[in-house]
Image 1 (cartoon, rainbow, N blue to C red):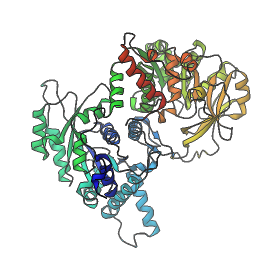
Image 2 (image 1 turned 60 degrees about the horizontal axis):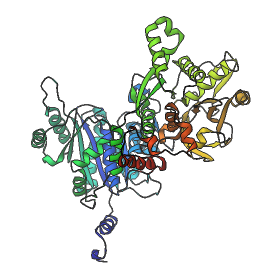
Image 3 (image 1 turned 90 degrees about the vertical axis):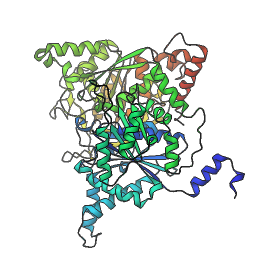
Image 4 (image 1 turned 180 degrees about the vertical axis):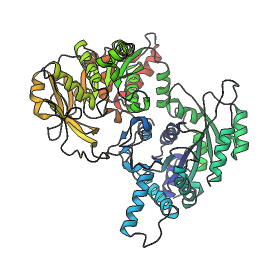
Length: 616
């Protein structure tokens, strides 16, 4: 049928469908690790998704571990959990939050997974007696894995992705990453040039002593990448301050790309500015031409408007909410990346700037009072100054008593409290110790011989093996009471589905006595045996969940437990519930002097936040 009978947009859609070939964008990093490849990859996906293209993503971690499940949070930050129970790198959390998609465990590739896959094939005799080598067997396995996972749907509509974003972890030149680099050197010919694009993210240092932008590290990094057989189509320069055109021209001359193929992403006030900054530098036009995406150009005037509104709103927040996070991995903020993001999402939706203070749980303990009184009193001063307290998940004995003390203080002072996973368990221990007077109550994780084991390990927990033996992934929680704050915040749903990651649970043997004293377990699993949601009677907001609601929080769709926590911390929860879980523009505004037009913009954001519209 001739294209003249179609609109331009319809014609492009038909062309894209008829010439359907998966497009791959490989993102590599140079100079240093932690340069921001995850946010940049997520931003690419956000822009393409706003262009109407279905996107998926893959993160490659070259370490030999099978997955991230056995890592200490101090190694790579938090362990992110997917719907299917996959324990993966925290960058997959960035992908899900930015793109509002649902990834699978196979979207995280590790050296361990690849070698395990190849060795299993060798043991079965699949290689017919051949010598199994890095090239071609390991490199072929990597390519086949990428092609297979790229085809898997990651959205509710089950539509097959059109573009697959691949982030190669680490830095070009790392010895453990060499098989992956070689695999993609071959892969670019396997899928053909117009279906493969290589993006290199590099640091451009700007020493304060000179104020100059130094390009030598980027030149060296690109030279090494090209020496390994991959020539970047786009160079993303990460810097503290914006870089000038002369610096871009210099990188262009020495790195074999045009000046238009060099873009700068400087440090921004929030990560929500990164997609907007990219779009302003012509990234849509570049990908459209380089990968034959058939995107309508130019883009509409209000392209990515919801994302722009979010970034602008975040920058213009005037009022603050002070939250104390009591944890045991506070030396590395990435240990609680998803919790931090969920708090930010809810604070922005409520019209407040989040001021988050990390408090080492052990510093709240009586033992610290004698060992280091200054540290002890500083920790308690920070706790007392907060508007609300959150106790997130964790494992092990260290800091447990400090978390219990934080729970006690919140309960007695009516301070808003949110416990997650271990937070629910320590809140239960504190309650039975001080309300039921079971002085020796504890978790069997901490004291296997305790007289009152109010927290016990689950029957399916295999104590002989650590990896993949927890209760993992999305599971259903059924509300058992209509008198529940969380049920109201979840829209009076009969059940919710949230992600889990735990080995221990509240002992059902003691539940009746605990509930009789005022601590209610208003959400349980489908069998009614596992305690999932706890709420304390007579308290403004003393709530804890066994699941991890932070994993499903999105920038424009905040997690209900976190939203309720933030609203309680600023004294707006009761009014919010009375209004049917809706904000008024006046409540959302962070500035009482807003004009009518500005209030209307605020009202628009409110609808986005509550209804959960995605950024399109």
